[in-house]
Length: 344
Image (tube, rainbow, N blue to C red; front, side):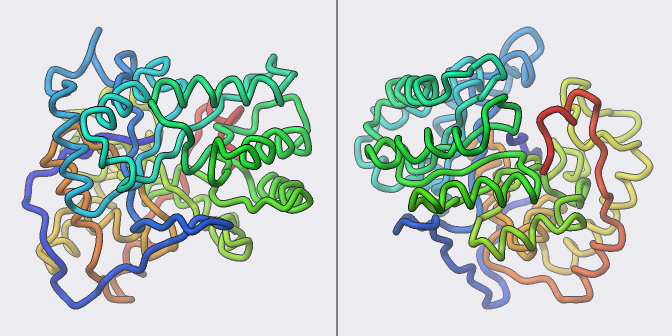
């Protein structure tokens, strides 16, 4: 789940000789840079628009963001069947249809929503993936994920369903989202029993939700060879410095919803480090996640934001700067509703 990053300064090329290594999805040869694009906002009018799309978010600006991301070497695009009731996938499908060469350049990830009433998970997961493929206009995705730990079926049943669609070539790799350390370990073991590797666990992780690191989830991902994908990496825009008590974040953006005074302390430290490296606060926030071993997937609603996001790559903070951010980072807060599906 992404957010749109409102940033104002120009993105910068590598300034201190640092170059980020490519990451590879477990069990595949699919590689990408440690930064992606979250496409929750692409088609989701209820959350990201006021009775419709944000006036600044149109299919043309999305197309521009798509092109700018690929041009910057950011090629992982994450979507889901529930984003805009499939409209996010349709938009990506139209981008792929407009440029047939794009499919070989991008890493496509989408998700299955395992609602509790979906008991025949083997059939329903396969049907959902087939529908996603139709909307995307492709014959397979690179990563298929369980959207959250809310199914009434066992991890064994979910693992069997995932393994089956991977064996049949409908996805190259499989992952989960919002899984705890224990849930992730169980799923990894069940998949392993079927000769399948768990590739990813997509979680909310940022300076406003340090919880995955504090609970040992990030370390557990490393031990299992699982890549943590970090949604809401700049706190749904809160870490850009755009929002203040006088200009609060829209109420629909309920992740990382700390009191503004606490967020201001984090943003102040981000600004200090950003100034030292000629970066933006949001770029520093993305860099912190990358340095922790995560892959942030911020949203991008236009070419400028896509280019800005790419400015989180290929530079280095000092150890002292990382520690300074660790000291001001917040553990994270969850609403009662979020506790149902957000375990990671």
